[in-house]
Each structure stands twice: as C-alpha cells, then as structure tokens.
Image (cartoon, rainbow, N blue to C red; front, side, top):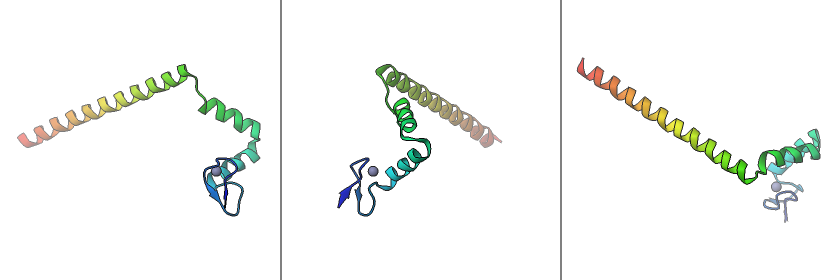
Length: 86
Ligand SMILES: [Zn+2]
C-alpha cells in the first residue's frame, strides 16, 4: 500500500498518483511543470491584501444575491396579492 506521490493523502495500489493528481500530472505533461507551478502559485498563493480583497468581493457578491432574492420575493408577493384581489 502506497500513498500518492503528489498529494501524499490518497492510497494508490497500482499507480504512483491518485486519480486527481494523475490529472494534474497529465496537465503538467502537456503544459510543462514550470508553467503549471506558476499558475498554481499565481492563483492559489495569496498575500493578506489579496485574501482581504477576495473576502470583500465574495461578501459583496453574497449581499447582491441576497438583495436580488429579497426584491424577487417582494415582486412575487405583490403579484400574488394582485391576483388574489381579482
Ligand atoms: Zn494524489
């Protein structure tokens, strides 16, 4: 019984890599390890400012969705009231 050489988390019986890591390995084979490494660092490794900004963006997005849901609910309630009066 071996663990995956990349994530060191999953158990592998026949391969060196688990299915997820095999996919990553395939991408590395196509684009090169250096390019994949750069992309992972650029996307996944964040400094505190970037983390704070991402949190703010997610919160703004959530607030907007909640506002839209409330507006839709109000609209539907008005529509229902209008239909009941007919
Ligand atoms: Zn793995």
